[in-house]
Image 1 (tube, rainbow, N blue to C red):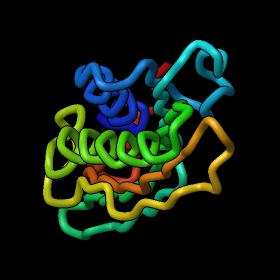
Image 2: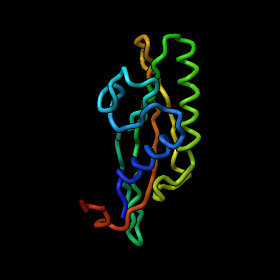
Image 3: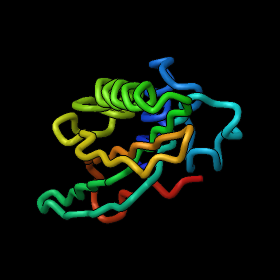
Length: 147
């Protein structure tokens, strides 16, 4: 049985394993994670949406989930901040794209597809990567509802 939280845990572990970020957590930069003065680079992982499609015989459900990763960089020099954001986005892509997250997702459908940058608030910039993953659920009653 599978659920989104298993995949989100794998995303956090993969990003932490790069040792490229001061902190990786669920929630907003400067919010649920460490106080903003405690980090230079912070990543937050958040659910955006999900769709389920029944694939027929035998009954299988493909669950496609969109999520976002916000990467925040705190640095006085704007050029250095921009270059570091670019580098860190590539670090995230290199560990998340085309892999099976948590042993559940289909690698061909695991991809960070889009990125946007928020208006800078000196000395911090935030870039949001929007990604998606897909995994299969066995039957209509196959959702993992265990505690």
